[in-house]
Length: 393
Figure 1 (cartoon, rainbow, N blue to C red):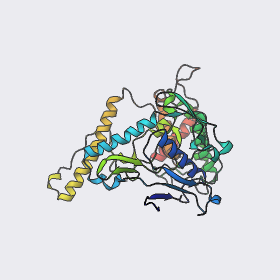
Figure 2: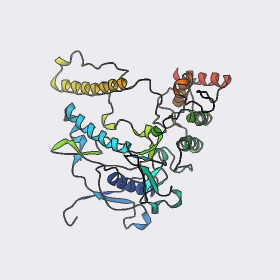
Figure 3: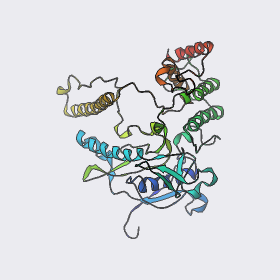
Figure 4: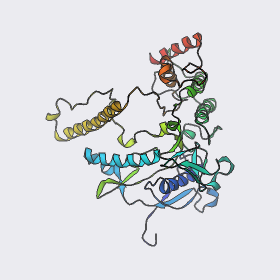
């Protein structure tokens, strides 16, 4: 700029999401996160989500350049203690996000950007449980990636907003059914074998799996509805989106990239940030990690790499021990972060495992005062278990 100040110009890629809605929601989300949730992030100076109204012929966001450097430049050399300080800072922001809940599922917008498709006048519960009305914002259609990716962009289905948790989950199943009907080629599950004599995806099988989901999900929703209440979250907290002070990399100064943020159930949002995802072989149970037997004899570079990997595994192990100690019973609910249409065979296996231990999962029926299985016939059971056997073989 003429005054020496630097700004960042963001122009969406073609695969960013729905035109207009993705940019409009990102700007509104950034304002809410910055001013209400008190999360450090860039200030937006100017923006437009309407291509026809811009001189550059594209949607854009002009925003403040963060004072800091991406954490990814420092992370490989940081000690475990320094990494812990960063994680604690990120957890502090997540605590703030978890303390504010909404009444409607969807994405945030300014009123003038969505019109009649929005839920009028934003209402939320603040960190003290007080109901707050904020007319600066409304909740409109979701801009989550699952609403756009893998052929969904041009398919008509309900993108929200949704008033209830039941409506939100029903829309997911109906969305995937619409995708199965309209995509030109079915995708195979990348986590199961397929080929001659094994599971073969068909539109009928995928639709059947999704209809099973629609029948089942209402009986698996948490009895504590706060766990399913709408929350705003940053869904992509990897080291490239976290800015730190270069003179003190343990100090987080900002979080960037709020594109495609949505208000979805807390049990979908409250996951560990990608920053601490384990990269490497799968760790099973509470088995304690160990250094390689010959680690002392390795050359310096390999020894350093082995120790770094051991430290990462140790962090995961300690986190699991901590969660195991906190848990007084087995987890009752599990979250599914993959596409139901793509992973229909996998989801069907998950479903039937739940049915095998129904009492541990099902929400008691108010009428029957006890868990019950909503749909089952012996021919269906036999048919589904044959399919599962073919997938797992």
